[in-house]
Image 1 (cartoon, rainbow, N blue to C red):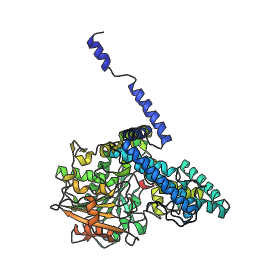
Image 2: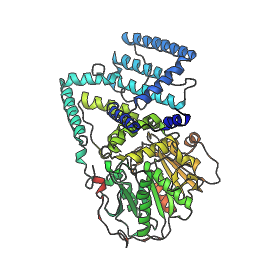
Image 3: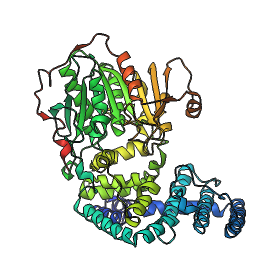
Image 4: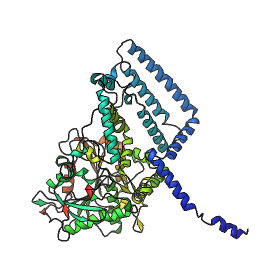
Length: 589
């Protein structure tokens, strides 16, 4: 065979390559159903890397052996005191956020010794998976997270014969707690299999109990319905407020109930409010990407609002992933230099830099994204229940195991509240969009690095010149506050206000005036001021009590026209109302 023919033979594509790719995808998709969407290859790689580095660290091994001996001796000394009936303080106390062992029953012998032994083991494993020379931060965080998940699974509180609270309930109730628990388990299993919401969620109905602020759908395309809310004041501020929620959840988190509605609060303060309601996609939408979501989402909504209120700038608000998408749109508008319709930009628990995206980023590796793509390619979308499962893993203590103990061992149903009912109303994400989102933003961090392409050119967050108000929450596992704080590094606008409030990703945002125990810190940075790192910031900015809503609303007023105008007609002259709020897309299952 000649060299020319030989080279042709080597570079001829394998005709069976496409079929082999399909086979690989099919195997991964089927495995994903058994592993909960977590890639075994990625987990194995992380564990191997940890073990390899630990094997080459004899000093660390000696340190761990010494610590194990010390903890064992410490526990034995306390066990001897316990057995002799001597008063003794616990040798280790649970963390402030760990409520598993705080009940009075856990102070009795031998359960006090059992839970303290577990906590000492937990502490030892935390040391065994951290501070290992040569191990990257991402791998260390991942293996530490895996260790916590395994330990949480084997906590003594999860076993009825080791949990004194379960034992006491069983003796008092003659085992009826397990009868109720079995009934709860069977009901939950049936609801999951039939796609029904969790028990108690049916008492909250969209449009009747939640998402009740009056308004009209004034625009609809393939991806969004745009709701214009009915004014409650004679005059309104000239600049309307457009809210872009995330499409990984239903919009009415911001119009939860009449008492917990950010929308109603704004309308009552004299603002004209518009809200995007995203369509719940199907497998037919598999090829809708981030570009489609930007064009059919915030870009289209801005055009409609500008038509209804011509000549007035817009206060744009983005929540979670909606804030990221809105930032992309704002940067594209600023890049082209001809579109200055934004009066301000508000980001609620939103990220534009994903290098410190918290524990959720441990799921976003090349191996995991490839695994998810295989799973999504078969159906054309990522089911919302799988995303919810990933969020639950971040707080498995509270959301998985404590739930199991309460509902199935103690036989006690947790009271359903509006926020929980909303959280169960999951949505789907199309294959292409979610793949691009994970790769471009999480894996490559293209937006923060100035590599994100809109049209035919990259955009940069530094081009945004509208005033920015960024809200973060202290206990956010989805958009950690230090990650949201990076907006201060990535923008050159004259003014950035950063507010940190108590609560988590959702509960911290739904923080109506009068909400008990809410606190916040807020500070504005102007262009000529030097940068303050987040740790210095949180330790120096004074803490204030109350809801952050009035602070932000006053900030909007200060950046609005002084003279108010008559309320605009629903849909203006160009758009006729299509239906009453909350619309039809939010009702899709």
